Length: 51
Image 1 (tube, rainbow, N blue to C red):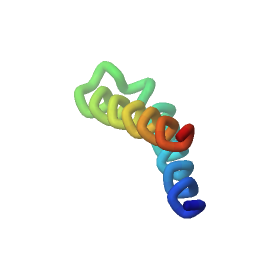
Image 2: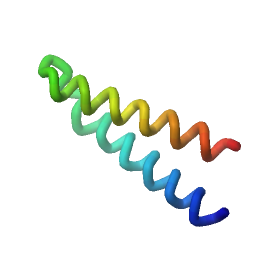
Image 3: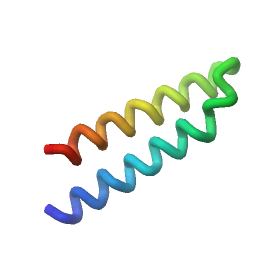
Image 4: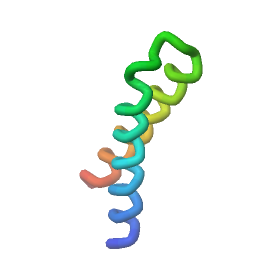
């Protein structure tokens, strides 16, 4: 159980890092896609951590 929570915490950190890195590239297509993936990964991880 703890390994799963650690994995989701790492995913959350990865998602927030992607949001931070690609926030200034929202005028390009790949920036929008990677920013959206970062938000989705962060929300999914937070949802699973809060269970």
